[in-house]
Length: 466
Image (tube, rainbow, N blue to C red; front, side, top):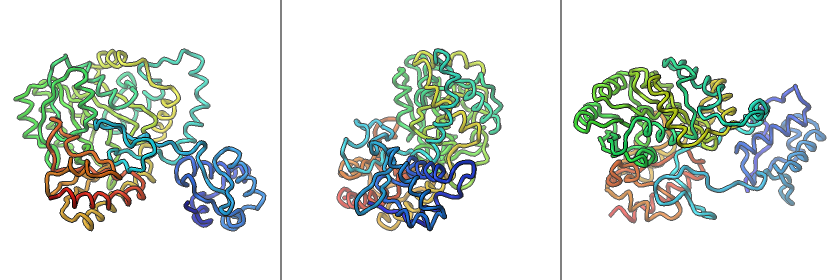
């Protein structure tokens, strides 16, 4: 069981909110820290006496706040440990991003570290965002609750978001979905006939390919290099394959992590137009910059024939289960029909949460961005120490490293491991095989999980790298 010191707690709490009573502020601040994972389940809180000295509040105030934490289920008394933070009902296992590996993360009760998933945890403040959205919900509860294209505040907020980024957009061009994969699937239904071809870079995000293949699309591959998209090869493949559409990941490509500049975006868009192919632009990772904010335009700024896919899963939280399409005007109706053939709308409460976040300019939180940057740099350093013959990239954004292995043993490594779950390089191949010289290593997990995983990976590598 961990323990947090009184001085550390005081720093995390910050200054009291003078608009409410002191005990209420302390209770709400502590509840928020626990609910948002900044104080972990099972962590012993400072004694009331130590907290009084560090926070500068009275003993009565601290005692009442601790008591309310216990009454609300966010703390318990434990002999010998005082007050211990907890999540009501305990933390729920799982919730990781499933990949086509024949499973959905660790089995119940497993202690394995899941490195098949590249997604951050919910940021601090998500509980408060839901509480604020609840106050707006009655306006929508008076109706039937179907908003197949999304509620207007969210569509307006997303339109303004694209306009701020240099891509003028009206709310009528925004279609809200239940996630990026739903957006990709809707785009495929709108622009592809069954059996028509889709071109994709390899490696690529495998779930997007599954969404397109489910509609009957035939896939063809063009390789992406370690420095990013090879536009000469893309142009040649478009001319040869003549696909109806192409899946494009110009923003911190998953899994390679590369970012395409404006000149490259302009040329890629022109090549798509020349080939008569619709570009499906996956911007899921566009806000995941870790060093400097990219000075690039959305790729759809360079052609009126590009469909843009966005998602809240990586930039905000996967539990929101919201994505969207930014549609060219001439495709908006077809995309809307395709979207409504899949389901009749996303949950209203979650849409209100996301509308408020985007309207206030919140994308990836600074705390999350800092933690990701530190994890990336730490992981690169550790790999250099314990696996010096591996060659990881250093992405300027995204959620994972793409490592070149000295031997083609990625699948063997994944099979050998028991305490860590890995997705081998072949998972990201358009063809479903190959890329055995590569391994994706997400760094979005808690540092303690990464610290446990890397030595296990190094030990397993010694056994399979023969």
